[in-house]
Length: 151
Image (cartoon, rainbow, N blue to C red):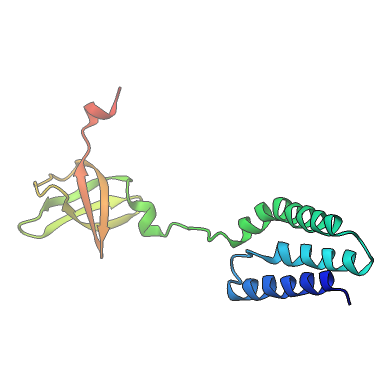
């Protein structure tokens, strides 16, 4: 085996070891395949410039063509939970909200939530509110100013 082929095989092993160290990211598999192609070209007697060109072209082509596809499957899909989907939604106060007495309820969609005022001010039943955040089983809401919402 000639020296260039040995170097390409060593590079391939290094790229595979790096890949094994970070299996989720697929950072160097493209270069391992490029090294393999260059090693085979070396064994077939190709000139050094052709080996380097094959390494760069094969590695680059694999990276550019497969990376968007791979990234789509490796990217974690953030799925909103029911609670996350409630933040920003609007509902009506069904029982007066008073933070001092720790009372209040809002109807959000089909569910009733214990509610507190985000700003600390009391909010009367029947008022349209927006959910600012959820803490445990309580929705923290603020009154929606209907006149400011309509333009």
